[in-house]
Amino acid sequence: MQARAVVVEIVVVVVVIVVVVVVVVVVVVVVVVVAEVVVVVALGVVDVVVVVVVVVVVVVIVVVVVVIIIVAVIVVVVVVVVVVVVEVVVVEVVVVVVVAVVVVMVVIYIEKEREIFFSIQHSGGSVAEWLARRP
Image (cartoon, rainbow, N blue to C red):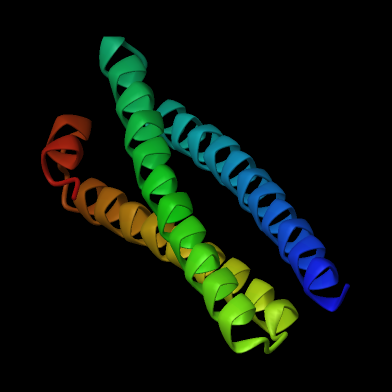
């Protein structure tokens, strides 16, 4: 009976992690796209380049986020195996750590993008130059 309760708890935790990660991803993608459109429009660059920039940004962010989610799922699977084998229930702590790591990775990525974009703009560079320097 106790093993069954542990499995149910693990399933609930995995579902919670996936839901939280998806919500964070959606919010981050929306915020980044809106912020970049606002910046590009504020700079007065409104042409085909703007559309290309927005599309590239969304694609890059989605790819990065998918990789982050895959890493998070792998971590959860490893933790589930450890919890079931060792029978130590530390799942709540792991949930907090995994979600925190995912959020920090996404925030670091967005901050790096922002720094590159604004460093090029301050030096008089173009949006095309920013696209060329993207990681």
